[in-house]
Amino acid sequence: MSGHSKWSTIKRKKGAADAKRGAIFTRLAREIVIAAREGGSDVDSNFRLRLAVDKARAENMPKDNIERAIKRGAGEDKDSAAFESITYEGYAPHGVAVMVESVTDNRNRTVSDLRHAFSKAGGNMAELGAVGWQFERIAYFSFPTSMMNFDKAFELGIEAGANDVVEDDGTIEITAPVESFKVIADALHKSNVKPDEAGLRMSPKQEMELSAEDAAQVLRALESIEDLDDVQNVYSNLKVSDEALAALEAA
Image 1 (cartoon, helix red, strand yellow):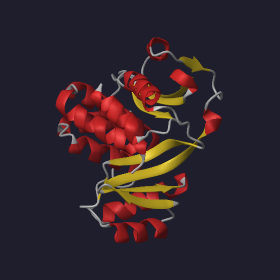
Image 2 (image 1 turned 90 degrees about the vertical axis):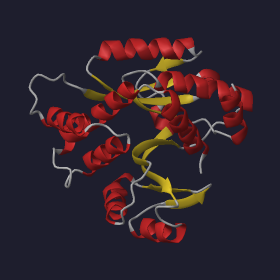
Image 3 (image 1 turned 90 degrees about the horizontal axis):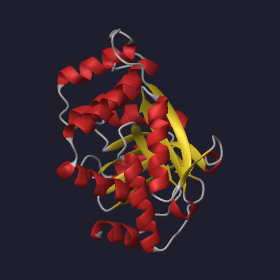
């Protein structure tokens, strides 16, 4: 499993213990709103919406909340705020490149919060395009081997157009070109596999390696950015080592 995925696993475990349930629901609802707005309210035909709803159900989000978010995204709730999806770029400490995906109903607030978080962490925001060229968008899925063994996952992934299928520490990761996302998502759904993570993500073309102490500092900075209300996902070109994760968990 990649270092970034191990970091995500650690955050999920921490989140189960100390995250505010309301904040999790807010983030999930915004994900549903954007998915419904861009692809329609039919869960069967809108694979991005289906994945967002599956994720919400996995977090025990109430059915009414899910249905309300779908209606907001589809434009059926005229009183709801208008959300938009915006990607920002910046640098964490030690020059680590960062991409931030946000969903917001107030750009000024989001930019202000991000600028403050970057600055407080010892980094800074960057102009559009300054960082983005260092990343490529890919389709990504991860799920435990208890849902599907590696041989079956490898066969499914390759047949559906995946670039790579790997297994480590009980977790299977599938990466693929963006255009293969729906095919793989449908194949997993047909096999009753509900991924822990599934979506399009920004993958660094080349990773930056730092000492364990410096890498842990960067990870803390990325966590502070990810904790902002309007932030959905944070990606970086940091190579996350086991030593860095151990230093972060020990902090």
